[in-house]
Length: 575
Image 1 (spheres, rainbow, N blue to C red):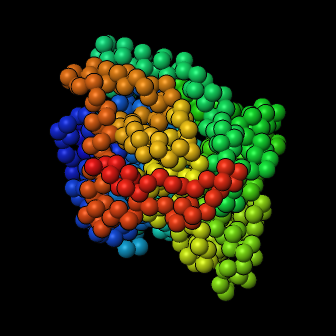
Image 2 (image 1 turned 90 degrees about the vertical axis):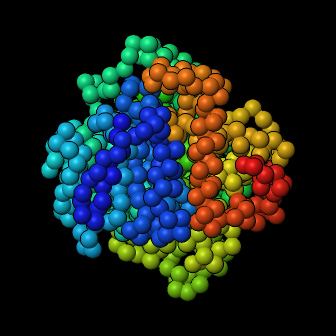
Image 3 (image 1 turned 180 degrees about the vertical axis):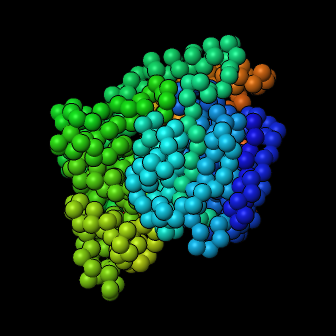
């Protein structure tokens, strides 16, 4: 396997042999960022890099083994960042013989480029004809001009214009650019480099990496074990929306800017309601869908409008939480439209939903300064006005600019004191006063307030017991980091989280190496400690590993709990 390094200042590519074939995904992005990026450099300057990395299991027909890691220094957090996405990117990069593509420097001022990697080799093309296109328009134009058979890695309007809430969209098995590496503002990094899109020759059955029979047997065993799991069966029918009522029952949903833990009429955005609507509307809708070839979990969905035509794909739990309950919106159609606008513009629905939440609080408390006070700020429950604010992003509207730059930027501009973020990044859809282990993850992960770094809600523990929070978070952060390093979807953990031997045995067989039984644990710890080291060099201290003060002082109903995990325990967890 090789690493392809492209200097965007002159377009010249170089290849580097990957000395350790086990490196990939989040660990590899962390290593490359640590090696090549000065820790205190400007995330939107030429010293930052943009990495697209496959995992060590990519390209070999491992279910969900083709997730794509996107790495660099985050313009939101100011620290190291890995954001990953489903779709066809990781498998396709691996099928061409690369483990990662690294973009250094930036295009000359005024230039906009497309990068292409296929059997003809790497090259740049003129991207100006695609300027300002939304993601689905971009994918269709690229397909028209470059032909079928490519994975499209798209930078939407938001990333092109350097908005810090921007993610990067990866096309799914049907070429829809709907799988976002959403967190951390990596779309803004891509925009700063003058890249509008990356085209990768799409993997096919014929181009999958040749794998020895013994290893294929281990892969089949893994896939079958995952497919038969009860949690996976639920995901296959209801998708991640199945989490809505679980967190509602716990009292940990974000409601009205994280001020309440349960939502009236949460059933309106529940998995069961979504399933029934999809089935009743028929048309293009389906409650189960595989975003990448060969996935046995199939937790994605295609949500239709009333007439059966496409509304959006997919609607995930985090979007239902941040763009639904957090805004006091219980209409799936309204949430779907907000989701659609985020996908098209290339925005993180978590960051956008949190920003809209503080904007709605500003509207209802009257704390916003002029001129914002006179701008018809959306109020809680007003999905129509929230959508209008998002539409303003592509026309340069002031409220749209606020939201597109994230929750911290929005909250500070509007004088809102309750801003649900850590290290500059919005919290996901679990109130940390109730799901305290995930609250520890928000605070202590080098990724910022990112549930994907260590979600604890599915562990069989009392989630409001502060004494269990640090141990739960540490275990899940290590596990998630290991899966991200392999390029495996975290939804496998419901089946094989307690069976690390499945993944370890696959790696042993594929690469012919002798690995210790605790290798996954070592892999996760190695990844996290590397990231912490970069952040410390960038100027982060333990004071950055804190939740906003109001989560510690203000109780959340109906449980009337606060985040009371001892700081000394959190500060010592990575020692």
